[in-house]
Length: 299
Image (cartoon, rainbow, N blue to C red):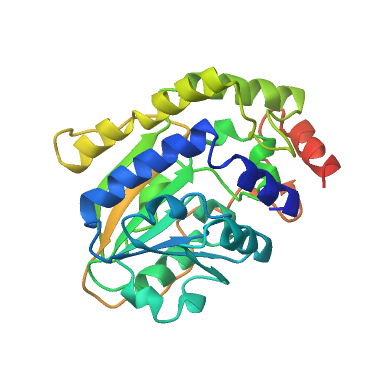
């Protein structure tokens, strides 16, 4: 991400409906498995400017780590209750990696070229009993300038998502699509904008604050999905959402040694290279050529 995108995130993350709804869902999941007000440690991997992890400081010890100095400086200035680390997880977490009770990896794995390597390294560093809350963007048909400007390598389907922890000592407590209620509207807007080669918000992103009324309604619609996800976690629902803008999973690290590993040979290569802004031969989505061009103009 570019500096102006971090600054835009910092400006909007406490007020934007998507951020509010996601924090509500995140907190509901965290509190289900890690008791609050007991000094437990939550680490936000890829914390960006800190809006997510700061929302837990009333109940947990909170650490945020991000490779961007711009992001961690913005976070440290605004949220002094969070310990921010500029660096890469798990290596720069040092002893904190083995102490954490919960790792948030929310919309992080799509940014790294080898998501298997990153998740397996995190599991290798984590203690047995630690939990991981993982979210990723879903459905390549929703690909847009927002993905390209944020340097995404991929969007996920459920089978590909679950493949990430199949060979790890992990118990899947819950996995589902989410941001489902607004999925038809977002799909329409994304596909229309892709055809036109434009983005919904500023700096080739989808971040734009709607009117206060619309923002409030949208945050309640999205955040309201937490009830179904909690029922799925509590086994009061047998199925999660079947489609959505994103995917979410809650995992528990079990006993067992982990040797970090790279992407298995049975997993297809990523269709997009964010550094060259280029598509693998035959992978280009309809209308994406103009979107990539628009994203390049803003560089």
